[in-house]
Image 1 (cartoon, rainbow, N blue to C red):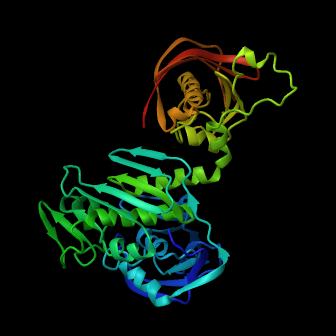
Image 2: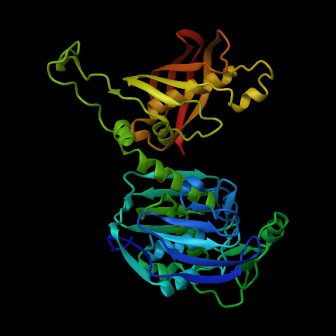
Image 3: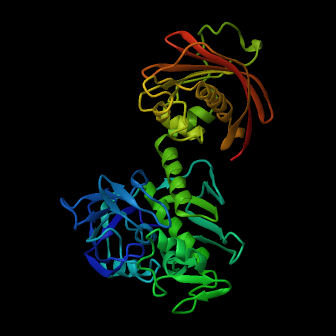
Length: 455
């Protein structure tokens, strides 16, 4: 994103006072320099101990109408515009001191924060900057939102935005550099539709909102204290938010982000998936690379003429499982893949008393529901097919179960071993035979059919 190869911080402090958009409280905010590799940190100087929260997707809390960070009892709301300013201007390390729970909203854009950075000045640091390049496509579909991160040599964002009725459909695309950030995205102000205001107020939001810091759209009229800064200001503000939310991966990003009707929830989920890819490069190699060939001279039970050897790969830990399955708490039924051999996969699920279903199934006599054992079989079978490169990014839908037998209860403390063999795979349809066991004893079995579909 930036030609600078060294990390940067601020040369000195810069301050701004104002009101928070959602809380409406008066707040003083100061940007301060920080040492190399510190990242961006928010410091609540109004709280005991002056707790700090690192700006990382691991600390994201609520994403309703804005992005909030939480650590312990400390929280900071509506951080996306400040984060976008740092990312856009190439600031790697800084401390943001606040005497309330939300930065001052300014005029609803990132421009006031860019001016603070310009006032403070940039200071090169001794440590090298390490950006992250997306290595393979990541696709996300959440409600009306579709987002894709594609490999690219710089940060580029292409965005389409509209409301539910298709009003104000706008499209914009830009390579994000320090120059284009300041000129094309940072001035774009936040906006909302008039009919949303009542619900936002009822939910205790936008207490500091006014025409001084937001553009309001009422029917076909645009209400603002000044003319629109761009004909397509709304989509540009959505892209400003994307720059801020994706900075939560913790490193400058190189990717082409294609977004249709983005929002803070999907933005942060995409950031999580990028971090998963970043943390587990060896899992990607295991999942999508051809299996290693046996060393010469080893006994393989046959020769080259006998046809291809079955694929054998190592285990996948939970991060590898999350990379392939879209399921999340409380419906992820796989903790680890133990092994994969050709069309057979063995995985495990540690059943603990913390499972949410034990509250009602049954009080005083906790038993894992049999249908969740079926779900575990279907998820493990899905992993087997989703490992194949051509199925990457798809969803596995459970279609039917036959020859189902439950043989004994599964209780807290049991380790469920899920052994699944793919018996049929034709196009998008897969069939598999699954057996769940505990301590070598079969507890359930079934034949499951599932369908792969685009996410």
